[in-house]
Length: 127
Image (cartoon, rainbow, N blue to C red; front, side):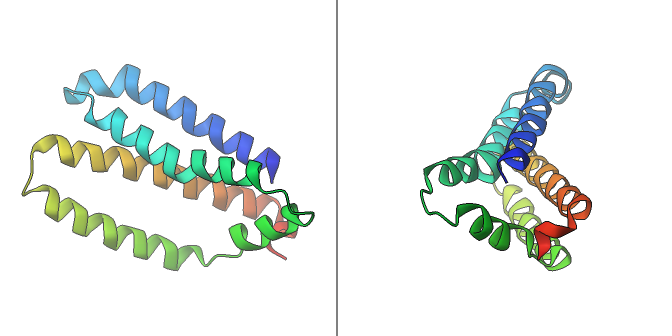
């Protein structure tokens, strides 16, 4: 689990830096990288911090059981529905809110892809 979290954090950090360097000038502002930063902190940063703070002797097994035994189709459908609702609401606000949500969604989708690939490569994590 520790190796997975390190890989996830590095993938999200590199995506955040590339978003800030190359996408922010193209879309005309910083709401996209800021949203991606918030998404990275919520999907990987806080999870890594909670894993680090957990002092239980069964930490590895408990985290693997709760983290990788998901039905990814249902999770993706629920998150896409939530994102669609938030995108609809963003039309009522300024355009930067739309970019903020796009950054958050990009971080979330990267998190799900890395998690799904890790679970596919390591089937013993799903037991």
